[in-house]
Image (cartoon, rainbow, N blue to C red; front, side, top):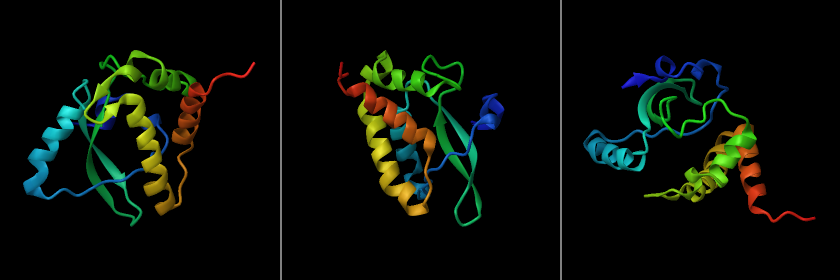
Length: 143
């Protein structure tokens, strides 16, 4: 397992990302990691990151990320390109344990808005703008 900043050259250029971390009881770690490894089997790697929590503590957390060697890696990309990948590409048509990638993305956005942004009073403009672009692709164009 690597530290994120050691394996992804643009990691230090990324803006702040808001989210949640969970403490998993030690006896449940193997089963949960097996489930996550299955869900993230499309070439995502595990990485450890420092998480700056709302209680001003820094904690280590495990994340799954796509690295530049992953065929699905978008890297730093314009939002329109990312929205296209989520909505219309072969990535969107893939289905995994959590449903289609499009369904997974939209559920993630809904959950994030309900349970993260409201609780800690932040707005992730990147995620909100990406969601808006993805949803705009679903609307029929009016001519």
